[in-house]
Length: 463
Length: 95
Image 1 (tube, rainbow over the protein chains, first blue to last red):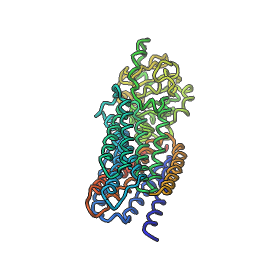
Image 2: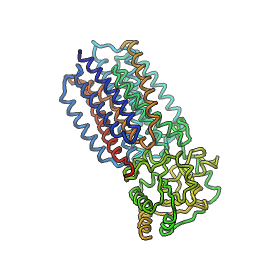
Image 3: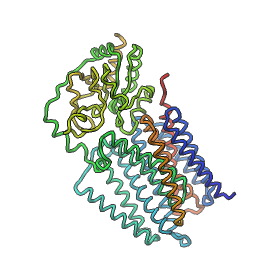
Image 4: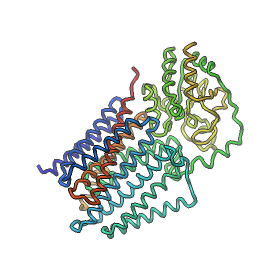
């Protein structure tokens, strides 16, 4: 059996393991094994590629892999769970950049060797790979900067922005055509690369903070599509299969995020959300809130029999999740049922809140999805809202004027008593007021979530 | 690459995408973050292309680009899998 056939069969095995790995990633019980399986698939693919007849010199390869692995492991160990969106954005960007570099390398080899000719199909796939990979790279870097706060996190828009993007796109199509026509003059290819890098920046800057989960999911999908395009250049099926899995995964998550915010993808991508609103709704009426103290909160919990906690990103920022777990344990010891209601866009990326609560040792079977828990609020004594705002704003149900009207929300307002732990009366991420805070059954517990909760816990211990 | 070959690759792409949609639509929201970082690691499969591009025994622009690609792809793969594993080991059922 020739070496080529062995390599192809090993790639097939790797592809199967990737698919099975993803399938196992779908159940909490098998997820960790699934991830391991998928990493084994990657290892097989890497090892077998070293047998490729074009791979002649190994020292640089081993050194590079060694350094890359060390840096990768270091980052993976050190990253805080609150920073997962940044981490994913960064790695997405690296994946995209890697695809571009592979495409450029292959192009360079073909363009500078008179013995090799570049067929039009290959030139087209190089163009596609360069465009998608570059947009993924710079787009992810901007997203990373926005999440980290290095770049303006809000929506950056300017006059003629859409026109500029359209012009860039047309220029890129023309450059691709020129590149296919004369594949040996690299000026077209380099110009295409530059424009694609610029486009990546331009498409992400108009997207504001609250929409970042959508962008991360979308860029995740792009990084897969970029790998796919590179697979076409190299005529390599495992790249296409793995890339397609990632591409579809990103698209599905993007759809879920958009649906959870009641926005179309086009609306998110065009950006500018949260700028025009807020001023119009503020003048209507002042929201009158009722405050509650620590002792009273503890007493309310003591006399309750069921509690639903609605966590938001604010809880994670205040590092209150461990205190919340303590509260949960304490309440359960008194036979009070405690559940967590998780909105699909809670946190800064899909499923982010689940990871943050898992880190605080809260068992995952206590975390209930929105659709499954929404009917339970009406039979619940206390809904405790910590660091969440827009996802419990009843305006989404009742006020057609509100910018979040139509967004599915958690029915926390239906609970007998609602306690809101919040630093101040500041508006939420979307920049709009929450009329829930003025409801007669709603009590405000002002202060830092972590210190309020730990005070409530120590008060409860004494009761 | 001839047209026939291209068609075969397109078949692979379409079928793999269908499998992707089928599998991923069933994954519960609890696991969406690990899914994302895990699939992120999978997208580092370009490491295969990067190894081939870094392979020649003579140094050239093409090889340098390949080495750079290899570094980023390795970072993507190892970082992605390691952080996913770290997350998944935190998911526990009630004791």
